[in-house]
Image (cartoon, rainbow, N blue to C red; front, side, top):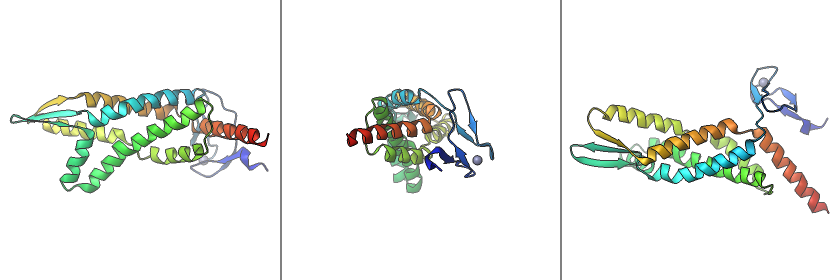
Length: 211
Ligand SMILES: [Zn+2]
């Protein structure tokens, strides 16, 4: 038995044979109906373009003011990073760490790793860390939750709207765009294609080393 021709369903562990699904197909597990694969032929190219766009949005989304608050003549601008520091200084250090990880560090790492991996695959450059980067990306994707922070901003604004003057900043536009780019990245990402491309690059490299 060639073990490389088989893979396990991540939900019910049923051993399945590799398939030849094409763009537009949906491959479901015959036992638990889990959506195993939805092929995106252009996934590498789109991931490269989208993660490059995301990289340019990271700095303004994190450093520019998201919302300005004016209460009794006192104006203060709030950025994503200053929000984390405020939470920490108020004694809510556990919340501040969770917000920092899920809204700043993991989304940032996710975009940088997506760019590194898709860039190598797009330009057919091999790298011995490609498999490791993709494995890390699979794990941190579950923890990057920009939408949770956006929900927090909306709730805070609704609460403050009656007692303060609010002014939305450029950081909010960059943050919403970054959220959209992240969602598009997730929906266009074809993990199986990425693993196949890494395997192909590795085989080409091994062949060239033999000669
Ligand atoms: Zn299954």
